[in-house]
Image 1 (cartoon, rainbow, N blue to C red):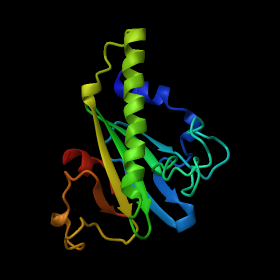
Image 2: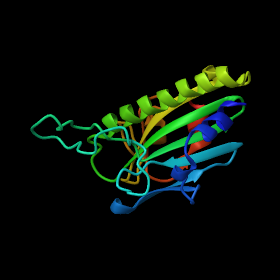
Image 3: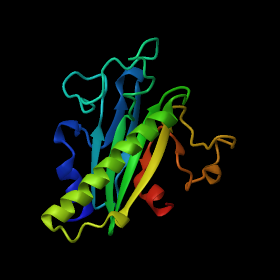
Length: 191
């Protein structure tokens, strides 16, 4: 079993949105179209902390707000908006994506929390591989990329001219991009 198939079997399909071609942040009226041309397989996951339908961080205390007392744990349950799995050739690209319509404060912590979760998924896949004899799975074929999609309509990297594509540091992690569209193949070819 290859990386894409094993990851999609591990992750709960409850978190797969019906719309697999667009990422949306409804509260902020922010949407980003996916450009999937050239990608053999992909799957988008939406982990919504505001939804009461499914609690994917069920093992963490829900009283996660900062404040006084033992339960005041800032950012305990923070998480990114989306995880995109994209298969290209023999590589699985795991995009950890945070949509921001305004300031990017807090995005780095959300990216880090989600990265730790995806590290756990990778370790789980390694364990499942050993138990089930899935020789085709190879964790070395998995590349993780953190992305902040800013809803200002322009691609940029901090400190650069936001109007010029050549100023984007495609190898940056996290990568800062404009809100629309999300060029999966272009990002992969620059990883």
